[in-house]
Image (cartoon, rainbow, N blue to C red; front, side, top):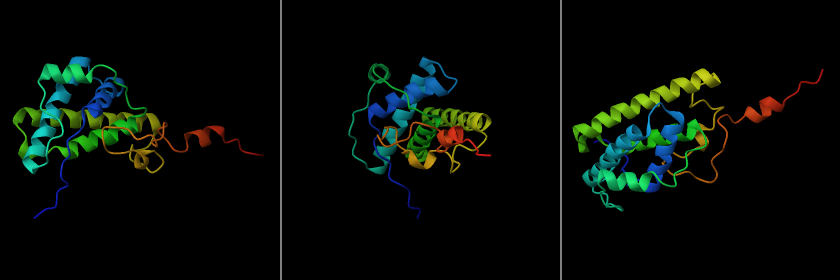
Length: 166
């Protein structure tokens, strides 16, 4: 018997961060991002119900979800935060608990994740999970902690301010 991590009910504020971050860092428009996140939101709720986790939020209609996600949203500061939270959301959705529509959203979300990973490596010359990035300091939930760093690379400031002495 495998010991899977029990899913948790993702708070709506987390989807707000994710929505704005997808618009900022990924090639999606507003309608695509909202539709994708709504399908993942349903997958999260279905996974919680399947695992017997009491829901802390009620299931919203697509219009209700969009009306609560769009306003007052701020994106993550870095691609690393987005990457960690995307993985956290994917781990929270169980395939056996979801309908085919949600499975399609998961596939689309994984493609965005891979695209983000490839673009990061092209720009910074290292994997997004590399120890020199802030990957290990970011939380794998959709909400952001105050202690999370605002830069992508830990050593970016030190590298830029280093002047070799002859």
